[in-house]
Length: 215
Figure (cartoon, rainbow, N blue to C red):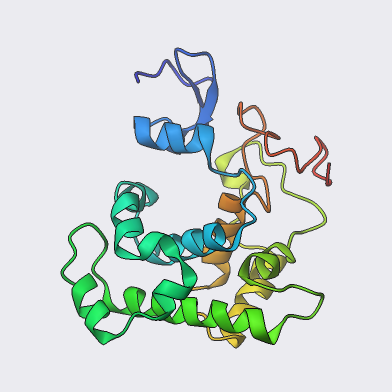
C-alpha cells in the first residue's frame, strides 16, 4: 500500500483515509497487524503466553522481524500450548537451534520453555488477588488510566504497573520479562491503549473512555 503525505509528524493517512502511526505505515504486514490485532484484548492463557514469548524474542530486534516469523514460531512451539512447551527437553532446544523459521537464540529458546513451566506453576500456586493463571496475573496489572499520547514521543516505554509486573514474573521464575518488555506486552494485549490520538484505532478495544479511564 502506498501512503500519502503525513498529516502530522507522527501520523500518516493512507489512500483508505485512515490515520496510522509511522511504524504501522511502512509495510502491509505491519499495517494489517496494527489494523486488526495490536491493542485488541487478549485474555486467554495461550494467547497471553504466545505474546509473552514473542515479546521476549523481540528484545534487541525489530517487531517486523518477529512478525514475519510468527507462523514459524507457532510451528516450532506447538502453537504455544503451555503444557506441550513445558515438556520440551534439551533435544528440543537443539532442534529449535536449527530451525530457520524462528530466531535461533539459545537463551530465548530456553527462557520460553522455562516460562511455560513457570506458567504451569502459577495454576497450582495461585496468585494474590485471585489470579489463577498467567493471563489472569498479567491482566491484574491493568492500570486505572491509560496514556493519551498525541505524538510518538509521548508514548511511554515503561510504567509503574509494567515494572511491578516484571518484578512479580521474575519472582515466579520467568525470564526476558523486564519492565520495557512487559509494557510492550501490555500494549499488545490491550491492557493499555497507546494508540496516538487521531489514529483510527484509538479506543477500538472498547476498554477505555476518551479521557483515559476505564470504559
